[in-house]
Image 1 (tube, rainbow, N blue to C red):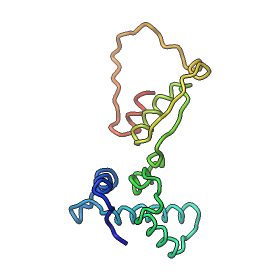
Image 2: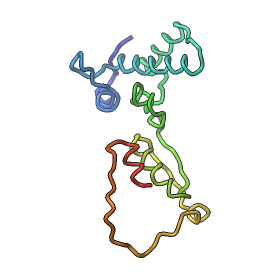
Image 3: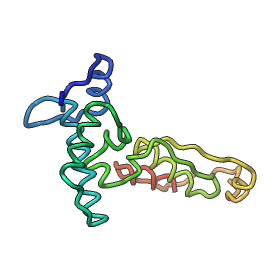
Image 4: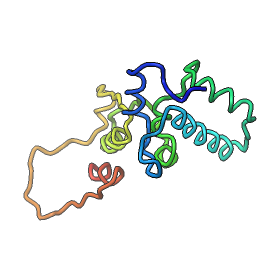
Length: 159
């Protein structure tokens, strides 16, 4: 099976969005290597979470079908397969939804967005009526807020 995508446009999208940098080879992944990284991750997840070994023939069939673009996996999962997706499965989703019904909604929204997932939200009265009232008065303070330079750190800073 060919490790190249058929059109220059597809090749560009793959290289610019999905191909990881390979330090040992000083280049980005080719299409076959991206598919292999995705499959390796998913096989590991299925075995670890469900104690199931995918038959080699099934893996080969799935690989060939993805390489030939007969089927396509979640492209967010393909983009993030590896440490990022293992660390937080939010990275594998295209979109999410949250009702804005508590102050915590804001830091959750920020965290989800920093993981690359879109967020839809509801500001319907039944939700926003649950938010605390924000005072009109502002007061001087000597309080210093230190923000950890990480996704959780930035999200936590909104609490």
